[in-house]
Image 1 (cartoon, rainbow, N blue to C red):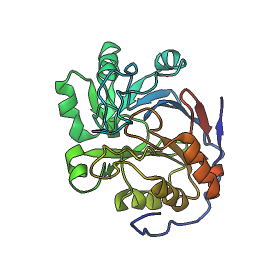
Image 2: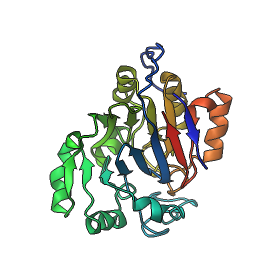
Image 3: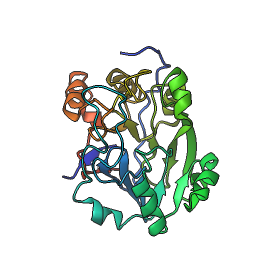
Image 4: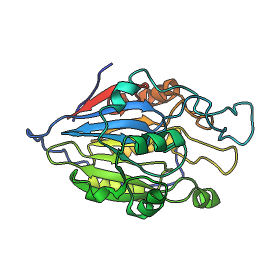
Length: 279
């Protein structure tokens, strides 16, 4: 599978199956338009699905870092100019979890105003409905095979405090399959899912977010290297970068590390507004 652009770890995991994937002449194109942070639009067939919408203007909400010179109000950057037109195409929302950097007040208001269905984990549906959202179980969306995969948003007590987070494996008919990991550190659950499902595309949070206490709550750069080497047949999109004050990893730094590791042909680190195509 080819992706094109239009515009060292604590745990040891079982090695993936390195069997080549057969070419499928019926496979169509899937597009990912990255907007900001974890917010992106996933397009295939007649679907235009907005993932984890954080739509607020810059400096709309509090810093996530608890202290330090890099503590700033969030988001750090505006949505790209392409956002207004892109949002007009949206037919539904995919939500991995209900944290403000994934479904902020602006995103929630936009969803209600535009009567957009919010497709999510079955265990989150009732709570979102109480907030006035048209929430539904993603597995009933009619977009092909959907599997909900638990993620872990931090180690120890921090992971428990941040609550339930999930990722989704989505395999539409005659389309590339995609694994949206959601906010997570490296875990057996995530790595085993990659080995078992062999997704064509993986979207992983790359910001190495840290509140200044309790350790990283997203993949470190070293873990991202292990992730990429564990999935040699997948194209990998890294997001959750340069939009929040507690995410120190930069695009340039991450690109340089992936180049050093010989992984550049497999990795995509889109700019805000950039669209990627996969088939």
